[in-house]
Image 1 (cartoon, helix red, strand yellow):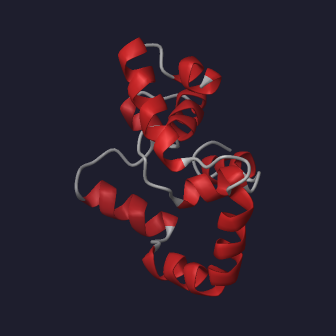
Image 2 (cartoon, rainbow, N blue to C red):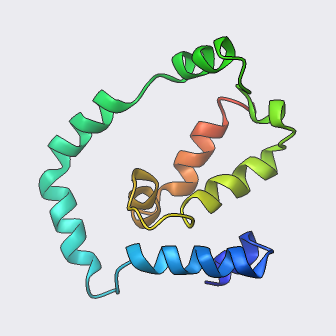
Length: 121
């Protein structure tokens, strides 16, 4: 919750983010069971992820063709703004996503940096 309060200055948004986040995060006692389930299902999960993801260049090209911003700076976002948005994205929905898995596995920062390196080198 401390992180939520840091990322969301508006108290109403912070409370909503905290409420959504509470719905998806487990107690420390429950986490090992989820890790086991994910580990046992990882080959299928990985296949699904690879099948569903588009390449960086394909996404960028599609956004450009549609006249949409294709780079954070096209929306006036600095690297710091983009990092903050990535961190905030973990907290706005109760749905457990690949970002949550990366966070729980301790690799969210490393993955974020790799993604941001596509934009900011």
